[in-house]
Length: 285
Image 1 (cartoon, rainbow, N blue to C red):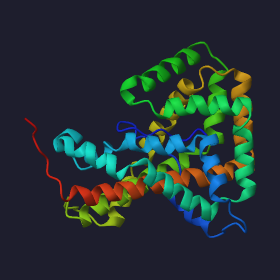
Image 2: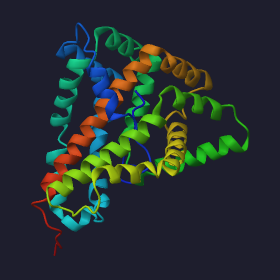
Image 3: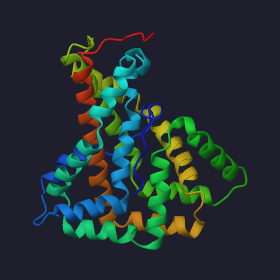
């Protein structure tokens, strides 16, 4: 699944999924939720297990939000990231939430697409893209590919736009990044790590005032990311993928999975804020 890969530099400009979606979907718990074994298989076949792993790559955004750098904490920062963003913790959280909210019908629909030949190739490409650090040049390469397509008036650009629109990332991304930032900063203030000079409502309003530029960044990053990730796929295959994502059932699957991903991210960032209280910026000799 084409879940967002959020790294330390890209965290500020792109996320997917509204945390609120998770709770709205949870109000209508399916009559028969999927069992654990089938959920494990679903995470693997859709690539969602790798998307969860990529959350760890965004960890360096936490000190940046506080005006610090990961390097300020020396080797303690690496240990913190390893503890808080441990794969088994995030994996278990995903299984627990999905066990309450993902119906057999939606699981079967999502898994069936990604289990065929095209789906497997898409997941392999997305998994590789998810786990690339920004320093690997993915953003720059994707932007160059997109620029080249635009310069020749390629119809591929419209296909990539359709693909991104089908995943519904823009609106949900704005809400998600706001929620993750608010929850992290409020947790940091509560833990005494920072002294926040505004109430939560004022913080939310400040973030909302930046939505215009945030949306533009999200749109640009999503396009360059798609250009990079799907460069080996034909126009027909990209169109087939977009059509699959436009199915109402797949849209529901995406809304839920995206919400789960960013609930886990917000939860882990809150845990980082609590741990930072016992850490002091250090200088290693």
